[in-house]
Amino acid sequence: MSQEHSLPVAGRARLVGAAADLVRRDRGAFVAMLALNVLAVGAGLVGPWLLGRIVNAVQNGAGVAAVDRLAVGVVLSAVVQLLLARWARLMGHRFGERTLARVRERFVDRATALPVSVVERAGTGDLTVRGTSDVGAVGTALRDAGPDLLVAGTQAPLILAAVFFLDPLLGVCGLAGLVGIRFATRWYLRRAPAAYLAEGAANSALAEELSATAAGARTIEAFGLEERHIAAALEKIETSHRARTRTLHLRSVLFPSVDVSHVLPVVCVLLVGAPLLARDMVTLGAVVAAVLYLRQLAEPLGTILQWVEQLQSSGASFARVEGLGVRLDATGKALTASSAGGPGGARPVGHRIELSGVHYAYDGTDDVVRGVDLVVRPGERLAVVGQSGAGKTTLSRLLAGIDAPRTGTVSVGGVPVIDLAPGVLRRQIVLVTQEHHVFAGTLRDNLLLAAPDATDTGLIRALSAVGADWARRLPDGLDTALGARAHRPDGAQAQQLSLARVVLADPHTVVLDEATALLDPRTARRTERALAAVLAGRTVIAIAHRLHTAHDADRVAVMDGGRLTELGSHDELVAAGGTYAALWRSWHGDAAAPA
Image 1 (cartoon, helix red, strand yellow):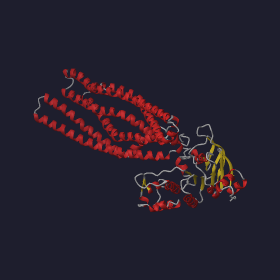
Image 2: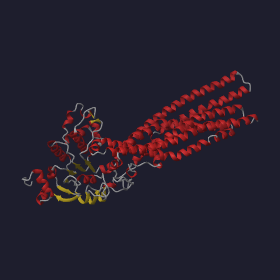
Image 3: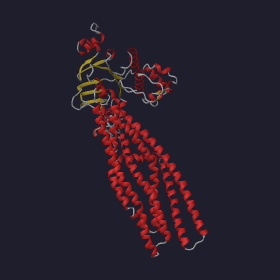
Image 4: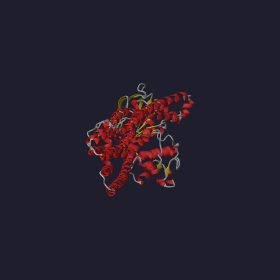
């Protein structure tokens, strides 16, 4: 998968803003978690300080009673720390789960808002990896790494502050022993982000290759392309292996450096504390307490550095997940506020659709649509006909804003469709093709995708409008589960569901690209008549081989070799005796009289 066709990756500024927004949405839990962690760390600092007091007390000849009182304090501080830490962790996990739910919901919203052409160019493998592995990595960071890092990040500076409070010189010694961690971490952080992003991209490319090969297995076998696809898969596997090995190398350098650095602060304090103690510049209790604090420091530092690796992986995953928030047009370019139809941006005025000098090539060189000029009037029924390969389906994709013309413009209401945000465009034009999908869930769930606020009455009317009488016979009505292990609609029923969603979406223009191709002629005719009644007053552009659709249309556009060769009413084109007349005679038989 080439970089120019891959889905966007969010930059640092966007990631910081997204993280801040997630915290703001649950700021109460975040503040409570932070406060509880500070209290827990404060309680944990009491124990080593009291142990130092015990050492000094014994050295000064104190009795058992005095030691016992201090020991009770140590036990109480440990119990309080345990309770506060568990409470803080509970709050942290709840915060993480709620935040992860928001990340998942936002990902689904953004994925469904992506232009179809962008997804087609990037491949479903990239989107699948982002929605599974990457979202899962973000979930691990929010649920586990986040709370642990918050605890450790609060503990480490407070413990160091406690050592400085005991004796500034001992604090300097402990801090000096941590210099090695700084250099090792800095070395790692300079290399890790790019390495983990490369690993994620390699995994996406591998997933895309494997899914495409599996989906087209029969075609690959029929054309004898097995060796080519095996070689391509092996190349993607090798690239993924090299990327994973690179991140493994980074971890193999970081972790041993950290393990050594844990011991150095304690060694520094003991080496310096001994001569200071000999000169009575520090008490034995202070040295013992400082050593205990620095041993205690190893735990939060270990936690921080352990999760640094996870955070690099999760950070790269978060960048890929948040990358879907970059608004794109049909060409894959980022939309600005004005081009997205935001405040002050151009918005369609009216429902007039106009194509001017439109050329389009899938490979960027060989045009499959050539110099098309066409105006579709609001409320018009336009049929587009032609032989297979004439460019009808490509024209429908251009009309719906799925693809952007190589040259020329396709506009609605005076605004180029590629300059409209997906949400704005879909309120203008909806494309319905032969392809359809039944989502796992109930019949109601499948319909509400198009109109989340629709009532049950509205859903039933939409089904009736497209002739889906079978829905009334389902055992649980709108609550009937659909899918592999439930009711499985056949091809015709699935297509009727797709058409019912169009009725619910209520756009002003509908492009039907062989939308009734899988229905038997009688059902197709009934569905088209029902749609004609429902879509009264709306613009309908029908791409069809069944010429009765053209007969009923206001105008007929004939495509031939990517060009618009004829345009007029059915009667006008039959009388002209051109390509359309030949198609009509072929459809009805040579002896058929013009209708």
